[in-house]
Amino acid sequence: MKKLLLSAVLLLALSVTFTSCREEAEKTGDALENATDAVDNVVETAGDAVENTSEAVGDAVEATSDAVENAVDAAGNAVDATGDAVEATSDAVENAVDAAGDAIKDGANALKDGAKDAVNKVKEGTEKGVDATKGGVKDAANTLKKGAGKL
Figure 1 (cartoon, one colour):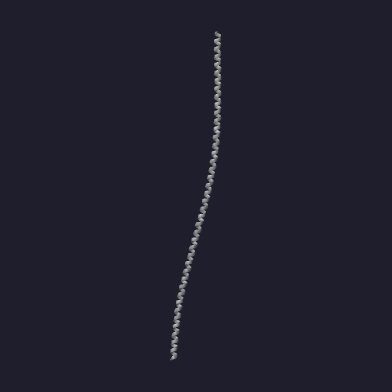
Figure 2 (tube, one colour; figure 1 turned 135 degrees about the vertical axis):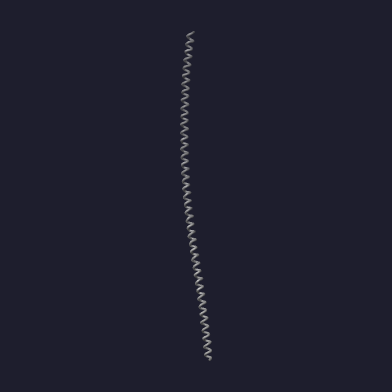
């Protein structure tokens, strides 16, 4: 009977051990499954973070590229505007020089024409004065002749 009792206790101990192990195995399996899910969630979150970071970097690169392109365009426009301003200034200076030259020529021509007119008027006045003097001298001589002829 002792043997029977010992055998029963041994069987009971074994059954409890197997049951305990089975429960522990189930708990371990559940914990392992939960850990796997947590790792999957962490990997998925990290993947999303990498993807978001990659998109943000891409957007930043694109924005920087656009800013650089706009800056290059603005610099090109400034160079073009400066060139246009230099060309316009050059044209204005050239036109001013031409206008000053023309004004000097016109002034010289007007002075020349005025001097010619003055010389011609003096010549005409002198000729008229000489003619008038000749006429006056002839009249005076004739008057003297008439007066001498009466004496």
